Image 1 (tube, rainbow, N blue to C red):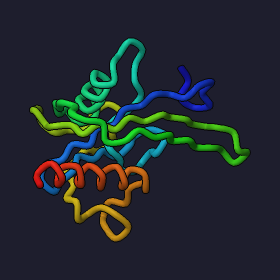
Image 2 (image 1 turned 90 degrees about the horizontal axis):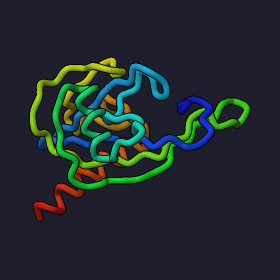
Image 3 (image 1 turned 180 degrees about the horizontal axis):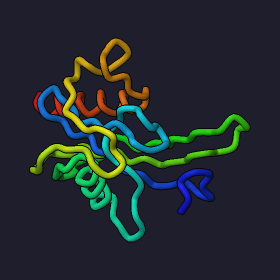
Image 4 (image 1 turned 120 degrees about the vertical axis):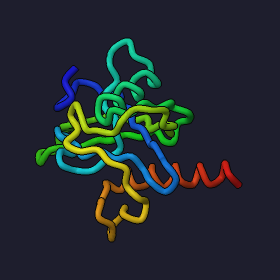
Length: 149
């Protein structure tokens, strides 16, 4: 299935992996969002479950093993070209994942991978994320705080 100018939406998975006040981020090595920091993730493969997909994507992009625990958010990511045609259309399912092992390194289509302190995110931080990515991360931090309360 073509990702650019697709005939139908592409299902994608993302991982929100938290460690205290840190979140796992990757710098995208390919379009869409090439060069931007984001959550690890990618397109689901044929015959693969959502859980299998998120585990595979995190391992490929970061070298880490995770256990998906709960869906944080499901949303559309539609990017149009200058003529208004749909260039990319993803239906994204972002999972809260627990780190279970492995050693952090970037791989696959990631240009970089690292643990980032929450204070370094946002419009005044070092890592400026897309607004929808920032919203998902903040929701995940709130979910964790509510579980502890």
